[in-house]
Length: 270
Image (tube, rainbow, N blue to C red):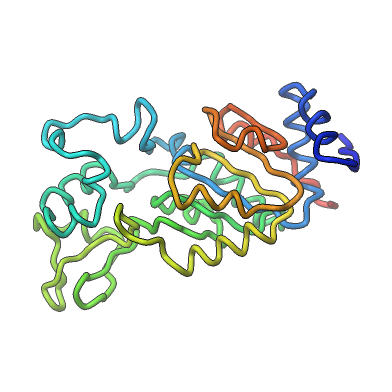
């Protein structure tokens, strides 16, 4: 498929708006192959096909009722207030719900790693904390919500192994150096996003000529605001449900992210 040069945004919208599902898949491959700097911004939906529940769907983490936690909101259980005021509750929830040991990357993770390896993808911005992009082989990944695979002491700041919290027999994991509380390097409710990851993400978004947004409802702020900084040529949305940015996107897929990304055919000569 040859995508023409458009004289206006409305002309571009009409062109893509007439496409059927197969033509949209072809257009996606063409856009990726002809773009100079493609960025990917993803959320929980990227990992659900690996068996990790998302937070807000009807089957997601926030809707898995557990009698032990029913007196708290999910947002509170993943907040800095809960961590420091009720650490036993925090770590019980964290250990039950956020252990990704044995979870493997899916086809979406692997395709993104392939696109990066072949020079088609400039980088990944992820809201996920599972480390699956790196496990699939992606190198340039900006984790704006941190990672469960990193831990550190809240007192002396010394890092601890990825499985420290999950392997610790203590209800509250303690630092072997100073006795302080070990916490995950995850951005909790009530905390600011990691500055370096945010700055890197902003730079990637603002300099990209194509942005693929996948597996996110674009409902979590400030992360969702990153899309507003994109002023490149093509905005593509891949999410099972509608998002606030669907009307502004050039291509929208309400489909499996593995299926859509898996359809991208890389032109080695592009």
